[in-house]
Length: 180
Image (tube, rainbow, N blue to C red; front, top):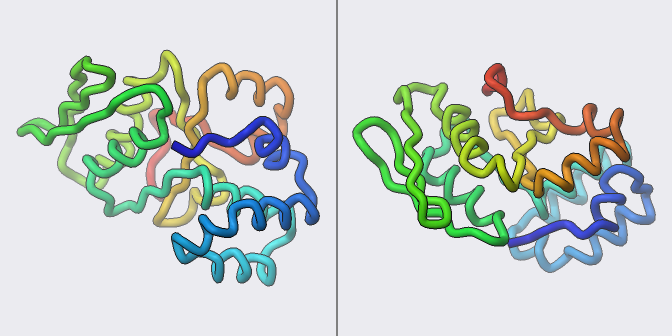
């Protein structure tokens, strides 16, 4: 599990060009391993530093969900980001059974394109006592959405410390959110 440090979260909200370059250098091996270094370099030509920071940050700490993603894979991706739990998923006739820390939770699916967010909201409900999933705003109008999972307490601290920036950068997962 990759968890951002306090200084990296500060960078996300307060970062400048020098810190962006330091972040890229620190995670250079990660960018190379996942073959996104060219994407990182391309961003510099297309976006301002302020626009680049959340995108580059999401490469390292985000969970990417394509609108065509298999629901079981979404659960696995999110489960891999949790530092202190085990997540298993099994398909059923009605949707999925998700086992989180030994407890089984059912998520009923509609077997339509709406299922991506039914799955995301269902998993958010399962982990809500400890964690929150939020959508990176920059990805909303795309067919691939980027998410960040942090402990609920950390989100509350960020909401208090960066109220305007946090609302501009992230969307809370609610009943209205879906792929456009």
